[in-house]
Length: 299
Image 1 (tube, rainbow, N blue to C red):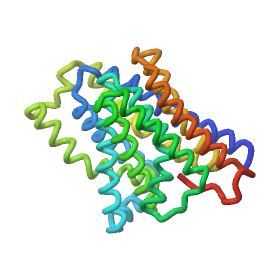
Image 2: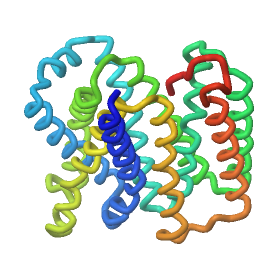
Image 3: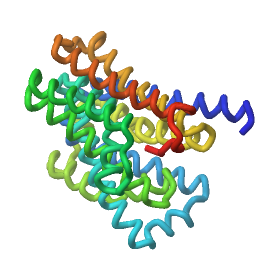
Image 4: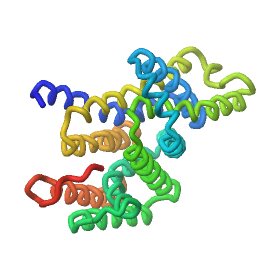
């Protein structure tokens, strides 16, 4: 790998995670709109944009192969369901002042990936991972004791849905662009039906003026751009580097929740985040070269 490629990969990776971290700002602009409609519009505009990209990059053959592979298609049906749940809960959380709870979910995600690997893939957990997960578990228990059921539900549902989505996509040999095209194609009829039902034949958001309609059209780019940057970065960077970059997005969301959206970081929540950050620190340091004999595992 050349130094130039490594620098470009780092720029792509930082760009992807910064865009994901800034998503709450975009969704807050759509505040007057129902979360379900935002997600439905996101699905449809993403499908249209990704379809254009598939045609422009001549990836039609790979897309047809993805649809023709029955096993891959069944897995992508499941991943489409999980990402739809994730998108809906995330947008609802942002619109209802629960960005801290959402950021907690994505701090938990690397450790939840390890746990799913043990429970579902038969992977072995080492001592470092066990300590890290125990610290995170204590943090979640503290969060449950000091937060509402809604906040706890947001954090757990986001963490679990995204971890299961990632687990499925890890096992499917379909490219990022083709996978998103299949998923949004599968979700598009449901999204369109919901919009027509919601607006009695006229999607409601377009009754709110051109400005709001324009913001919704951007949902396709907002969804697709970070995914493409991530895919480009993953081809150029080491897994360890990508693993460190993934903490950018929840860190930005955490900062936005406190400084921009005015959410309160209570002592109990601070202690919860401290335990989870400690777990992440143990996990990351334990995975550094020379700290363990086993090769780094992919998340």
